[in-house]
Image (cartoon, rainbow, N blue to C red; front, side, top):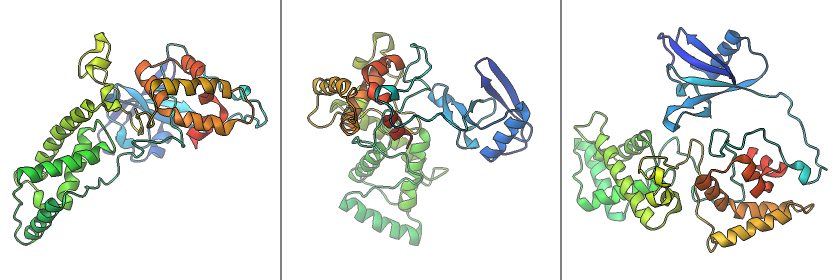
Length: 345
């Protein structure tokens, strides 16, 4: 992103303090250089980190880990950090370990101040982020046999492989399934990565008329992914059914409106209930947690029940978008010192 073209950014320094920052030489290559520039320009002291406003996710704020995320006329926010955060003594009772959050009831848990609800002990249907190098899965035996022969011929004569309908269907289906292991709603960049990985592993699948050799594959994967989501939705997949028109409010009953999907760095966004569990059984465990939270030296039981009810808790947060106060009333164990430490580990 570094260059000679001037870049202008909006910098949020406080609730009612918004300044403009001009970078004559473009956005710095390193985050350290940007932090130093902001500190010098606005005379800031102490430690702070930056968040940036992502237009692809409804202008929500995300932690800035690389300057490549920034664009001209973008918005960043300065978050001051405490050098020595207050410590909580280990001998305090469970009730005194609850953490207080300064927030208004109107603040939703689904907003930028999202409280992480995952638990290390919980089982996850999607536990990995999108990989740096997308791995093409193994296809059926006959498809792999034809691809191996096609790749050998391509290296000799640069001849492309002619695909049968069955072979094409097998490739698209397996790649779509692999994509879904990481994202239910992949973006264009993810389809590009998958298509590029496909022709890199199997060069005989390159498209002569495409600028990058895989544009057609990217488009096919988009259509295949949409069809695959439809099939899973018909099978009752919770992560996809939550966005069906039947599950939306009357005012939001539009396919492209208020789509609930993971933000960056969220993996297990809307997991299924554990095998054999129902809404009633999960609610029963939640009520048991309200009793267990008042018993001393009961951390192991609480941790186990919190892990088992993770999916139930996620459904509640995504569907109802409760305020932090409402969530604290229903899930007080989530705000205890040990649970918070688990999330920050």
